[in-house]
Amino acid sequence: MRKESEKKTRLLPVYALVIIDLLALGAALCVFALFHHVLPARYSPEYNETATGKMPVDTYSDTPDFGARFSGVFADGEPEITVDSYRSEHIYVKLSTVQRDDITYYVQDIYLRNLSSLRTAFAEDTYGKAIKEHPLDMAVRKNAVAAINGDYYGTHSRRGVVIRNGILYRAEEAYGDVCLLGYDGVMWGVTEDEFNRNPEAHTKGVYQGWCFGPILVEDGVAKTGFDSEIADRNPRTAIGYFEPGHYCFIVVDGRQKGYSVGMTLDELAKLCEELGCKFAFNLDGGKSSVMIWRGRIANQPDRGGRDQSDIVYIADGGFGE
Image (cartoon, rainbow, N blue to C red; front, side, top):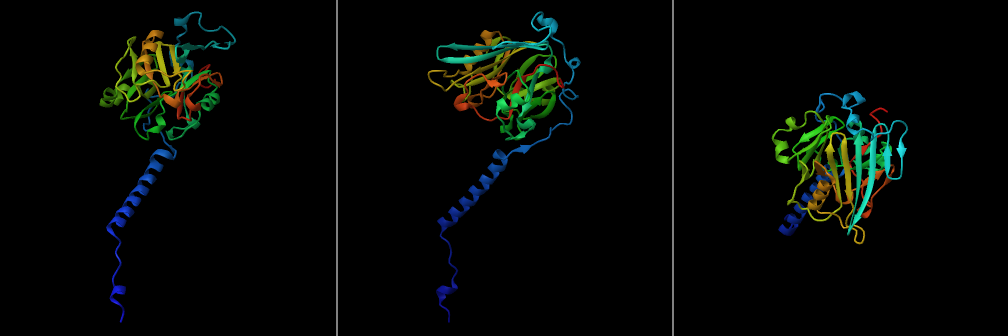
């Protein structure tokens, strides 16, 4: 006859069952995070039509010619290139480096004959989540004269506003202020709540659209009192608008004592106002903040910078040239 103890099933203690359940839950969460946040995923545009109902600009006749606005700004023949300027028939870009007190920042003053010279690019030329590439590599591949990092749209799988070179990739649940650049060359912004109430109304006739923020300057006046976890001094990237065909890229270095400590959002907004911007918008900052000038990094990114999902850049000529 078998012993009674051999007949009984040995049960695990309650604490052991709890530990097993927690481990299983942790493993499931790790798998979810891996697929949702880490592994790259390629997407197709969520809309079959573009923001304007047509494909991206491919000739100069598709957008206004701003040449008459800026008499004498553009070159008549071959490009005129110096260490800190680039002038051609299509664009004029001037790079300035400013050091004051404990802050260093860079400004690219940009004039365009045609809006199609202001472009955006995705990492690996692919729209998707967690697809990253160094901004310098993107800029070199696109033969950019000037470039800055974008809004790092790829950190969000299905949220935010992504309108690039006339194609509406995404307009779902903005998670911050939205910056829009129309085909007429006008740049403006809307708040998260405004956009989410009626996304379709805010995407008609839009050539480029970014979601990050906050809006720094509206109607030529700097905003103040930013309620943000990142409002303190940090490396910064911003895009500014003066008038159709006239824009600027701004990058502020930071987190580097003895060189540059960065700017608060209030300081960045004030700088954009001082430069004369009618509108300005904050893009991704921190380690993302980088400025490219003719095939090299112009600033000193925090800890060398990082790979990212997109850039904004200036090209000499229209699409297809």
